[in-house]
Image (cartoon, rainbow, N blue to C red):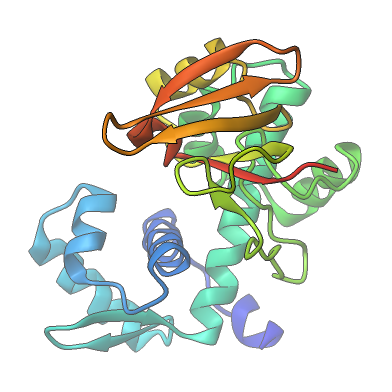
Length: 229
């Protein structure tokens, strides 16, 4: 597997396709529709079809006509490598260069294609081998393994009146990240959901300092929490 991967010189475009497919698979646990790639990459369907066929020839994807694509083991390994670079770069930009967490995604999109594996491993060691990025997204390790989030839930459907900790923010648009920061709900924040009212579409929660805030359920669905230690 390693030899096969090292023989492939993936372009930034190929890496973007692989990462988009991986992220879709992680969220939906199934085949990746061609339309999902069109939406994620902002290109026309014909371009996606042509690119997918070429990547299938390289052994990076399995293309099922009128269904979509699946990552091959080689494609998945390359995609995890790109995702690792992206999330480590985001972490470096926030922790070391002190950039705002709402602006590092765009920078990481460019840098993930330029950082060599040698530099990446130095960054990883310098940061102390983090397991999540500033948004709480799990960082694949050097072997391509990624943390299991099976025990976590969103604020929209988590258990109420239990000590919880914010672990991940799913919506990473600048506006939503500003909203999260303004409400004290960044990853690591300790909270307790006090009440959830489906009829009105809101929930009430308390922060560690006792402050109570009200969130709409759509916003709560974008915030992942786990049991607080």
